[in-house]
Every structure is written in C-alpha cells, then in structure tokens.
Length: 87
Image 1 (cartoon, rainbow, N blue to C red):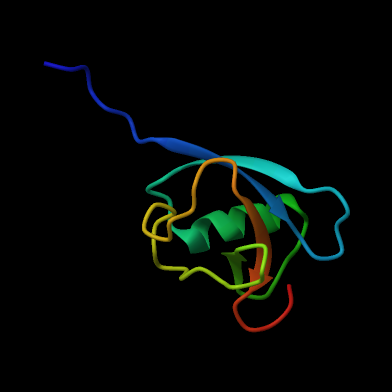
Image 2 (tube, helix red, strand yellow):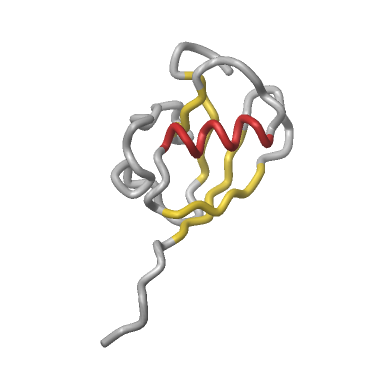
C-alpha cells in the first residue's frame, strides 16, 4: 500500500510580549497547544505563568486541544499568551 505516514507538521510564527522579534516553530499537528506554548515560552526565555497560544486578535486556543483540533494552520501568526493574564 503506502509507506508509513508520519504526522503532518505545521510551521507557525509566534510573537511574544516584550520581545521584538518573533520566532518560527515547526510542530506536528498532534502536539497539544499547551505543550507548544510551553516550548515557545522557554525559547523566548519567559518563565512562570501558564502559557498558551492565541490568534493575532488575542483569543486563546484551548490548551488541551491538539494544534489540528484548534484549527491552527501552516504559516499562521500566533501570540504567546498567559492563560491567567499576561506572560
């Protein structure tokens, strides 16, 4: 039939508060939003809080959904947010 399918990946641009340059991340669509947000926060050098990702309008995605379930798509621009306030 077909060779083994590997999980699809998406590349997104993430903006963080108090950081002037965004960063690009490539994640499998099966990664949870909360896990991706934690990784992004770490890469930006931000600690503490409860990081999540949101759209450019500042609306957060559910942390327990996968990137695919949250309908995050390839090349989307995202905001790093704190689920309990600012990061």
